[in-house]
Amino acid sequence: MSHAKVNETARQAPEQPPLWTGRFYNEGVDHDHDLWMDKLKEECGVFGVYGHSEASHLAYYGLHALQHRGQESCGICTSDVGNFHYHRGMGLVKEVFDNEFLQRLQGENAIGHVRYSTSGESKLANAQPLVFKYKEGDLAIATNGNLVNAKELRHKLERQGSIFQTSSDTEVVAHLIARSQHERIEDAVKEALQEVKGAYAFLFLTKDKLVAAADPHGLRPFVMGRLGDAYIFASETCAFDAVGAVYERDILPGEMIVLSQDGYREDRFAQVERRATCAMEYIYFARPDSDIDAINIHSARKRMGRQLATEAFVDADVVTGVPDSSISAAIGFAEQTGIPYELGLIKNRYTGRTFIQPSQELREQGVKMKLSAVRKVVEGKRVVMIDDSIVRGTTSLRIVNLLREAGATEVHVRISSPPFMNPCYYGIDTPNREELIAAMKTVEEIRQKINADSLHFLSKEGLLQSIGREHEPHETKHGMCMACFDHDYPTQLYLEKEQSPVSGSRS
Figure 1 (tube, helix red, strand yellow):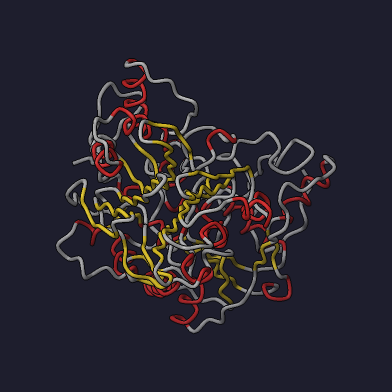
Figure 2: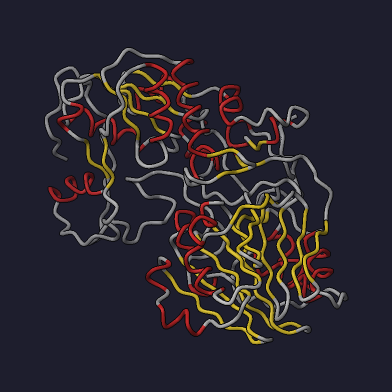
């Protein structure tokens, strides 16, 4: 494999795996084995509207704002005087919906979903909202998260005669609701959610009601807003800005909100257990203009960068961030150190599944289709490269080498999170532990693997301080889930190789 000549001071890069073997990028490659952009995969996003004449259009714009949470499939379901209308498709929101489709989705109530499959196959049947017939009429369900005991419940239901139409764990909840003896949907939902374990933000839509519920640990973000007299629900507050809604509050762990012709009602299906908001939402997943628990994501990431500079200063000429999620941390690092921040890396947002001739020369050139180094910025410079995480290490290696090929004399890597050592079971698509480089290698071994001059990760204490949830001093880790860093899972885990549930913590 040929390589561009690098600066003489750069150490020899390790041999890299082939980028792809098909006619175009990602052809025939599992979504979790993307050898170039080896990043954590987004989860899902939900959006709900109750009581607005343009519900479907609001859902469209809301889902568009949540597109970063899932690009695999999307859907919207509306309720109009007892009639359901819905449309789902594979692809981006702008590709699946047009004005003609939205006009067909009549009604003042709607729920929508953008999906990245962390459980269930990537196919249209699993696209949400899932729509079912049950004894009280139509039911649509959209969720963000993952049920850790879904397979156990699924096997139990199948033994009792249930027939499943999808491989999505969301359908498990639908079967539990259908089997309930309660007549009111909110009571059936409450009973069903008391059986499931995991991380979730659920929206349930019937002919005349909308029900929103968050898991007892508050693992997934879930917020409520108002637009005039209408109620709006979303995975992130950035969706409110897209539709002109005003943020009211976060949905509390174990809380259920019921909207109907009788008005607004707050209920609870479970007491708050150990509160554990996902730390990766603050580090990577959420959009910078979103707020989680009244904490702005951009500001939190800047503080991570500042803390990283305090913990691991290095003398350099420029600071650059890996777009997009690491830009805020890079700005914070630069402000703390006084080293200039520069756009040393540029992301190409329009590659998609780009057609390319499969010659060896063009395969190698394809590395630069996703990301490019700005030669005039980094040439002859000592560069600090800020990134949010290292998963397998393949991305970090290629980015470091891009900077070296562009003439950087030194590349110092700083990561705005602790070492990612454990898989997530709560809705983030992560590799097995054996594939996580931080679980298998020391920091020095990782540094050598990614061809960096130095490497430092943000400490767990520094991360918690940067996020800024000190107002929760009585809660474990200030109410955060950091299992991917410390193996302290807030729930029991139901792993396939285990005969019974296993404790989530080593303790």
